[in-house]
Length: 76
Image 1: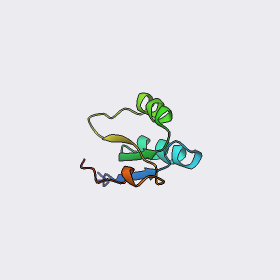
Image 2 (image 1 turned 60 degrees about the vertical axis):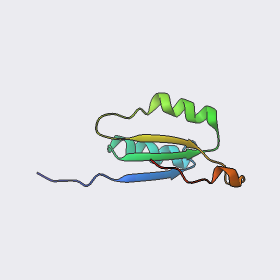
Image 3 (image 1 turned 120 degrees about the vertical axis):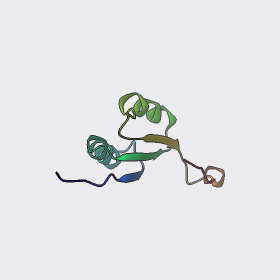
Image 4 (image 1 turned 60 degrees about the horizontal axis):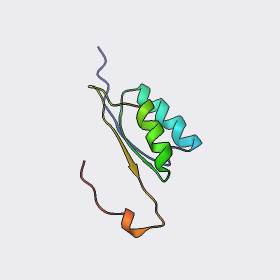
């Protein structure tokens, strides 16, 4: 039996084309995901499509690098 290591993946720009590709790839591999995007509406759409389950965690955050107020430390 091969024992694969579970990865923790952080994706900035998760609602863009490259971010969406990476999100699909790592979600299927049951990796834990921390996803960032500027667009709150797109984040809400992703929340409906990519739900966490008992084998993985999925966190969604809105983040805008143009605002220093968004760059506060968060604990997960």
